[in-house]
Length: 145
Image 1 (cartoon, rainbow, N blue to C red):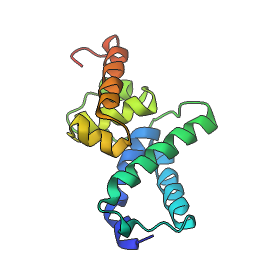
Image 2 (tube, rainbow, N blue to C red):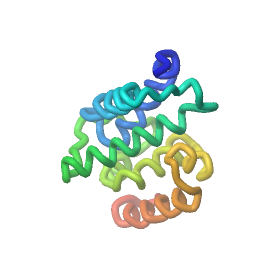
Image 3 (tube, rainbow, N blue to C red):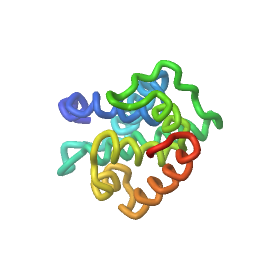
Image 4 (cartoon, rainbow, N blue to C red):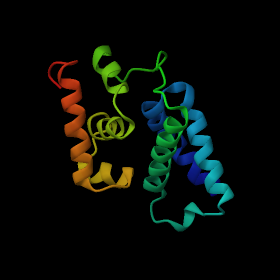
């Protein structure tokens, strides 16, 4: 794997993995993704934009990791984003991984549903569906979502 590409995107990948799995698993998720890419002899430098591929790989590994553990990890040391109420942050952490990813990419990062879909490797309609489901789950927990 191109080391420069990894260094360029590493921090964003770890932040994304932290939102998806919690701080205790984020580094492991990213390391696993990088190791798999290295073992497969794929070169990221051949891609026009490797970030969507890396983000999708992190999302897939987070889902696989959760399936292997069969439990949702507790996030007790998460760094809260600025201007986000703690109750909102805790409620979002409790969402399923795909919904959490959609919320993070659209509301915290500020991506459109098209951009989030590219990062998640799905259609924009799927991102909008994840957001709709997330809002429904958060309605009872958080006001003004």
